[in-house]
Image: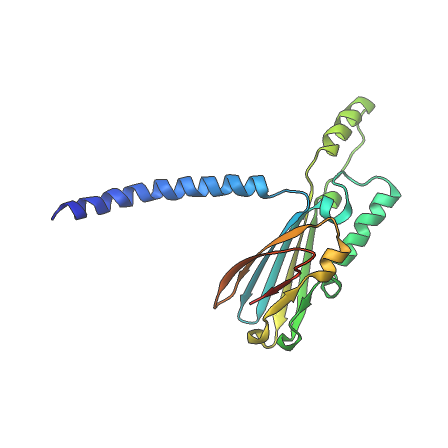
Length: 194
């Protein structure tokens, strides 16, 4: 009869190892999948009247390159993408009955955040080669206030896929007070319903 009680401390002692191993495995998988051209992620959380969306994408999906823009054409492309990304009405459609209004948007763009200084020509060549292989990302955090959040049942990203056709799929995680759901959106399946 005492054996089950001995197993409980043993299982409890092993659990942190299993959790730690699982977390390490998950972190490794996440780091490998974190930057894949053609794939973006969208985390959605609805708590009370606050709706938050966190979009994360390789810059390649958004502007077609990942190097630091130097030409006027590249800089123009980055500015145009940033304008689109910060205008949620052009990219996504929410259930109108929910009465969601954007309260803030924050854009983090690796292509515009890195600073360059003048270096000797030989260093520039090495820097340019490394930059061509760089993995730069763009992340946008949207916060909405929804007048009737219980009416929010739908988000459609058809316009996002149209605006950024290099995005082949968006891995979505949705968390509400009632449910948790995962989905994959594609140009042929652009809506998340819950």
